Length: 487
Image 1 (cartoon, rainbow, N blue to C red):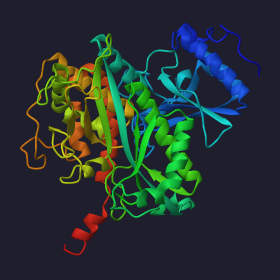
Image 2 (tube, rainbow, N blue to C red):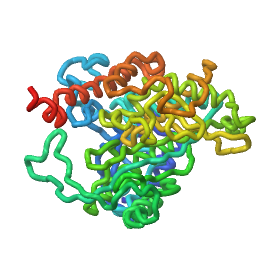
Image 3 (tube, rainbow, N blue to C red):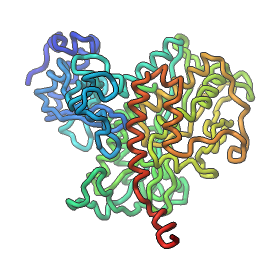
Image 4 (cartoon, rainbow, N blue to C red):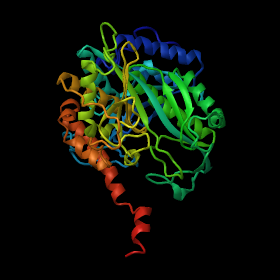
């Protein structure tokens, strides 16, 4: 395959519909040239589904130019599956709820690679990878594309003259696989998970000894992240046995959403190839497990001057932007939980005295509050930290929830309540206790209906209700132990 001549990629459907800009087509040509010069054999083209899971196809290098010209067909039911991979919409009917013929018949949608996301995979060096945006097959925008949803939210913030700066703290576990459970009977929807054991004991938070025990894996993951230009800043041994935390340098929400998706994928793939099991599940069912959280540091800057709008004039004050942003996050916290904490398991983290929030409140440098204020006069790193999310969240939807909620607070002139000192004894409203409670708050939210559209609200709640319904129909170990002998 020879290098692509300038201007030859724009003539297909993608160019005619304006799905890539002229600059992106130039980037696409450079990607093809790089893939050829590096001797790559294949490129993985993946889109981020509704759950924050990468799905896609792998192309030989010779097919890459065609993907930039005309996109690549993808089965539409991938957008309609719950976390067990069951399709939960009636695709064989004329209308599944979004208009006749929309996403029916298990037909195709279109994915278009974003050349700015191109990476070579350090663990599979003959492979490149790119993230894709999803469209209808005729090039119309897809309202359920996670990346598109965040792009629109970022645009709303830019229209208000502001940009978000964020930094990530992500916790996860890495275990040794003792039994992979790959018998035919272990397959299913979902399959039986592996049996695992620890790489290191826990409960020695940030001790050098625990870090040293985990360092061989830490190093492998860190080096791979750096090879992929992911902005890793620090690594640490967390409180739980074999629990890791990686933090990321500040960047914009789109850059960090892409980085988080690539990081999670990289961690799971590298670990699996080395006989390890990495999980971003919030509270794994293993003895002595400590729930994993995902803390999102965030501030606003003025688009024109790049001035941090959260730097206060005095120690006890809040700038108008910080005041409104915090107030908006608090007001919409219950409805936002479906986007920040989208699994049944995630709600089992909201426990008092566990360095996790259980109420809707904020405090100054208080790790028990949902929002931790880290703002002081003259500190250009002034920011807040939202500690509400689980690491399994779809990052595009999580960041969207923060932008839409915070911007609403600013535009409406809302004021944050006084900060709390004792977060586990305050009279603040509780966070939702379950996924179904979060679903109910989200589907009645005027903010999300107006900003994301009624179709998206109906779409996401149907997916998550299917997950909840399956959970409610399963007899748990707790029920068996509680009732089987008693009654």
